[in-house]
Length: 625
Ligand code: FAD
Image (cartoon, rainbow, N blue to C red; front, side, top):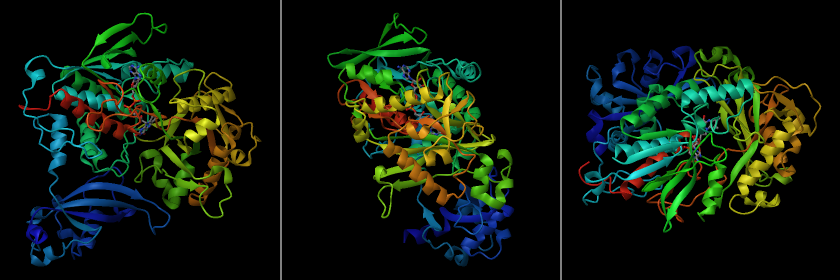
């Protein structure tokens, strides 16, 4: 009944609209082309595409589908149709409307998405907080107006320290500041301008600044990255939309709202972060760069502040004590010193499964031709019609019938953080350890394609190497990072091996194919880096990946060691409602380092919800806002 009543009004969503490459203006065009109108007319079974007014349609999502099993590669659209804007159409009659009958997966009537808009408004201007709309990812209500008087708004504001300016810390700061808290954002690294120079010195002069590098500094670990904005927590959820809209507000291209695989690239992330910083400062947030939190001030089992040292002060001799009402800990998973410090205060840390492996690099042309064959020439270093080709591979090894990979029993192997048109970078924060990751610029124009190939590991693996206790996973990571540094021979040289040699357990090729990694590579026996059962799992999965993407195993494919920091090896248990540590009051662990996020968007979402939760605990959400 409702559907019938709404037929002449409202928004209808049309899905799976395919437009072939020859009929589409290309990956960068996000409007309604003639080719798209044709596809819409086909789905609606409307006879004359030209009669459809393009202003009635809005592109919600545009992806490129070049899977082998489809006949012809095409752009695939999701489009919202505003029936009221079809007024100019003669055919807006009972006949036409009857074509809009809901068809599963193709045409559906859209309910009004009020909650999303409210959340976005909330983060942006904090004008109103509708009851019942602010829920954590787990569905728990974390905001409800209490009606009590707001002592912090009428008297002093609560003083909150947010430690770490990665996505989680930035969004926690944003929400708290918008809601009226007195926020200090403390970051051990440098602002993006200086951080860029420090990373330049690393790449050109081999000088690693231990506090300002690919992991530490403004924007966190994801700043010099591919800036992929994909997340497993639901692309269309209100919280993810709020985060993406906030990025757009700070300068990200609007296309990230529509693109099926949105990414920013380092060159777009840096100005975005500057705007974010400016906005926080306008809101009154005090930002302290180059200041490392070394300890917590605890009184009566409650955090009352932090001990801070200048990041340049390696002896930690000049520490200052800063008092706060609460501390949001958003330090990422490379701040291993923080884990040790938390243990010294008896904060619960629980070892968590994660994944380790190697980063594989192919010439981008190889991946383009595997994925697109005839269309590969359309890529043209990111300037062509179709996107630079990527891949995502997942296999479960050891569990299938006839599987000979005995040592690899029941493990997931998968590609991770694939960077098309990117480069391999050093993500160590300590000169005696080597670990790598990938980054790219927005056009993804480099001639290389890299991705981590990793296998899941758990406490049993940590125990098998005699690592026990809450930080067993950290020790496990460190073990292979140190081995990789030794295999590379020092000076940040990365050990590499051709895929073919890795699969054959041998080192036949001393002169390896070129790599995008700027600090030098050295041929090494990477098949001896991990315990045999993990190496077997990786070998087995690579062979299976080659069946899915024939040509993936090639002489030009080079494995780089080692990829260990795929996600946090630790989780810090916290309350589902208040986001407060279960073992230390006043401490709110958030983001990837606390084990509640994996990636830029999910970390931002976690920080955002933590901001609401902390604000609520200080009654900042009540009454007159
Ligand atoms: P982080 O981003 O790690 O931020 C933590 C911050 O805390 C850092 O700035 C650090 O300097 C600071 N800090 C640490 N200790 C202290 C202390 N004691 N005192 C003060 N400050 C401290 N994810 C994606 O979704 N897409 C990608 O394309 C992508 N590419 C990546 C590429 C690279 C090279 C790397 C390293 C990561 C990439 N990631 C990517 C992962 C993503 O960056 C992280 O998941 C995300 O940044 C986690 O956010 P966070 O806020 O929890 O922590």
